[in-house]
Image (cartoon, rainbow, N blue to C red; front, side, top):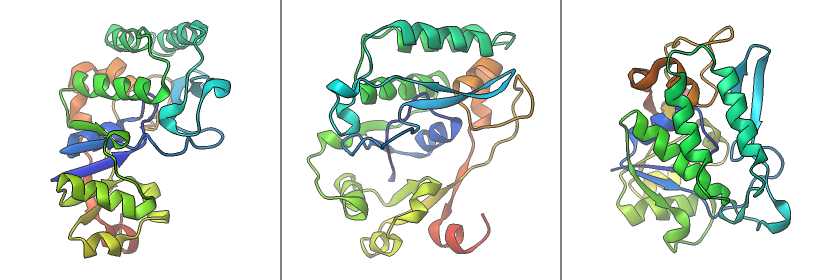
Length: 239
């Protein structure tokens, strides 16, 4: 069984949808500290005629706790309307504009001000659009304490996972040997993206997956095809 454990990201890039596609169980790591400063938990890049721009969700810091699942979005709906206007503008001329806008309206239109829950719905809806899925769970529902590698291992063992799939940032902190001692294989994402038709200049995959929706529609699923590489090869061999 293949396991992904990831913090809930805001309208994430295609790489996260690849992780959903590869996972049997996708655990949202929601009961950990909200990153200080700017992070992909509350913002994502979009391409515009003037270059890359950040689309940021405003956090209500006064009424938020320290963890991601305790983080509240501002209840003022102006930012939601502004985001929708921005998305319509940057995707104007894309062949599947209305598919992207319907997805965005459905998500922004929900009365959900918990950032983690908002992000969960966005990922699930975008994955469902492309016909990919996993069993989604929340770390906050599991009753598993601890921290760092030990907690990740315990979550994997809770579900009986034989393989843990992770993004590239984990190379800086993960104890790979500890996973192996528990009989759990560690694999890193091997991102592989053919350029899809894109507006506004040279191709980049590092934008919200709504870009793939707007430009390719459901046929965009063929671009969600990345694989994995064993951690030893990732750290010491060619990537």
